[in-house]
Length: 594
Image (cartoon, rainbow, N blue to C red):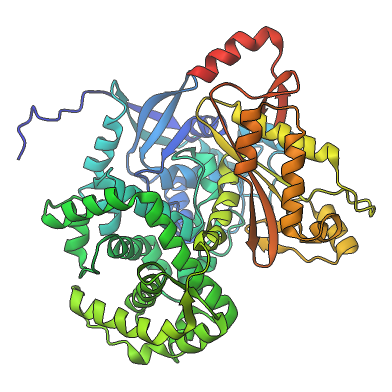
């Protein structure tokens, strides 16, 4: 055990009592922040939220909330170390996202909520909770402990130490909290992409976290848990998602595809991979990660995952029902076997799917050929035997690779991009298409100019920024109806987005998609931007096929110097593009260099 002087966390600590009214003021002004590198998902059910509100209304004590005082854009803000679920519940109740006893918080109770009501930001829901109860709730005093750190890295350590006692966190959450190493980051990133609660960055306001929270039926925000890949395919249960069992599966699979041979797995082995227990296994995995690279491992994972998703789509049934005739089996290990068998065929034998119809036929009932051992330890022998057996059965549906499978990963990456825009609007923009919806089917030059202008503005946000403009995605109901009327195109829906694609335009404006792509490149070359900007934007255009909808994705990033459009500089604030005035050039160029 380390001596008391070793690795000491230097902090100043103060204990405050703050009313809920003041806490809502902090929340409204985005003063609460969450670091997703170590924080849990927002996963409380309505029942858990209502029980917590009931405790407050009845004056019962609640656990201490722990915050770290930090600076954000020159303003004092608070990073949540412990208490994210509680703070979210309090503020979402005030905003009317769920009821208590069948009635909703009276927005006229607080000055802040009344202001939001008067300005149309919030809507009063009915029936309204008795004012007396709302006032009692708003005046409740929360116990808060605030840490001030001279070294911000110590926030991670405090979170780890507090949660290592593990009363509330699952085993996998403790692993994630206990490591800041590359393997843990990779597992977290890939897991969030599969759950679709991915975000643009790791630091989010508590208000932004709500947009990607995992919710149950009855809540009209966030991501409905029933729609998650793991749940809709009956691979694991909702409770297992709450316990981060999905991340354990991802960790098992990533370690298996990183290492030269598929290893055995167990809870203890996962602890070793996460560095909680030093062993040769953690060293071996670390070497493999450095050799292959996190980006390549993520690419391989998403490629296989999307092959499975496409198979499920073709089969028109869930993964469980594809493999089994009943719902009695526990199937996480069966999923791993199929996943690793497909990975073996694609990446170890350099093959690609020849026929999804044949693949579905061979996957149907394939569980009868899989012999999984029971117990906590899954041996390398049993794991490899099953993977080899399934790969042998599926092999006839694959052929020698004729093209780079990188495009396959875009199915999930595109969805991740859509979800990231929910928490970082400044770096993302969406357009319905390249033509006006006036029925004349002519290329909209003005709209295209705005696309390129927006790309330069996004790149100018800071010296280390990137962003996207997606063409073929709607969020306007009138545009969707008009596209249906003119082109007879029905959108593909995803998490509040409507993907209409641009194929209907390409068929009118060009010979085919390749010809249309070349025309876009030519139009970029005609834009009043630098040669470096033209080169970067042109080289990073992607046409992504998303459920038979072709979407054009433009990528931008900050280059050596700010990007100029014409003879002016622009920057993006939220969804708006604003010109940088000459009198502000000095500050603009200085901020770009920081």
